[in-house]
Image 1 (cartoon, rainbow, N blue to C red):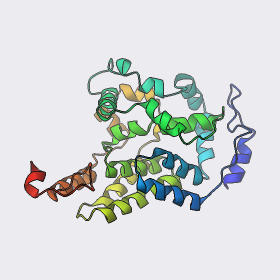
Image 2: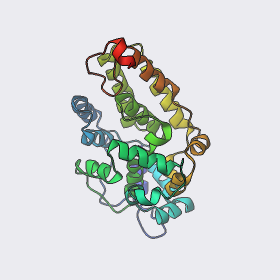
Image 3: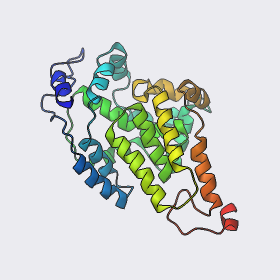
Image 4: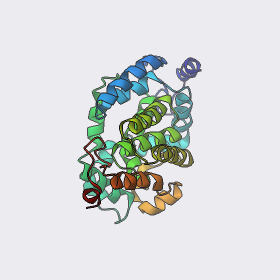
Length: 277
């Protein structure tokens, strides 16, 4: 399935001549053992983003090329490529984004990125550490777009950058764009989290809710990000069928009651009095 999809893509181009798949782009290879190797490395250091990208490369989805084709060769996709050729300069221009109305997705995004010390350019730098070759084709544009909307997903869904929040965003992403890489990282990572932290927190219920939310939400990669940034945050969530992540918040509540810091799950437990302080 993967091979035939890629072969068809060799001959398709956008109106401006950009190929769907560059002729020098290697065929996708399914390498589950390689993915497991990189997953084990990631468990040693969850901040090692390079391992994440290597896992994605080792578990290509047979539906990826059809999704790229459906968007990029459509009139809507052509318009998106013209108006949003590359998202990081748009997302990192906080001065321009702050000119949009208070309460907008743009303001929430700027608040999140500034609070966490993040930038879209920083995510690009992390992905480039994987030293993956790049090609001038529609696959590249689509792949960049999926990567560059990651932090926007945090903002729209309400999931933080704590360990559980990241698992939830991974499974939200799988709901949007199914791939075994997201499935492995999301569910295996959540089970590993439960193993490390003995607690009554409903971790698996939280990630399953995130997975359902991703399926119900229109794919963000297909939306005009400029238009989305200008919308009221609550309005955007309603339009995108994104509910309050109440089970995720319940996990945080339970952990705090148990003296566990949700943002440092492996730290020594505090006494209930300190946890409530």
